Length: 134
Image (cartoon, rainbow, N blue to C red):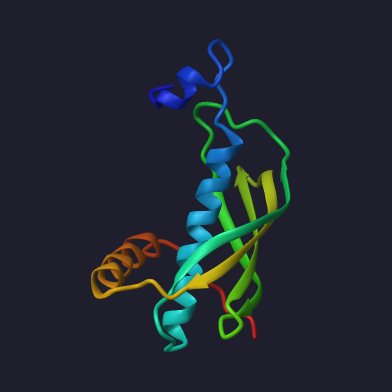
């Protein structure tokens, strides 16, 4: 209840907004796709959310719930400028949200943005489990 979002959404019946769940899934996915570009030795580009499909919110997120975000690369065509991630948010293994997110790749990175992204990747993926299937 210490988060402002619970005081405003909705008073007397606090819920974590689906838009913020989607935002977290999109940020995680975009950063991961940028990480994939880097691992392939490709030029750094910014992954930008372009389309949300099949997004479903299956349960209400209440104060005290801890969501775990997961993403799986469904399509990855960086040379053609896009990728699709299948994403989900779970709490105690119960599915709360799922969908597909499409990203485009923009060539807007400068040295400062690359350094900031590199720092964010180190922090964000410190405890992440990355599984490669070929």
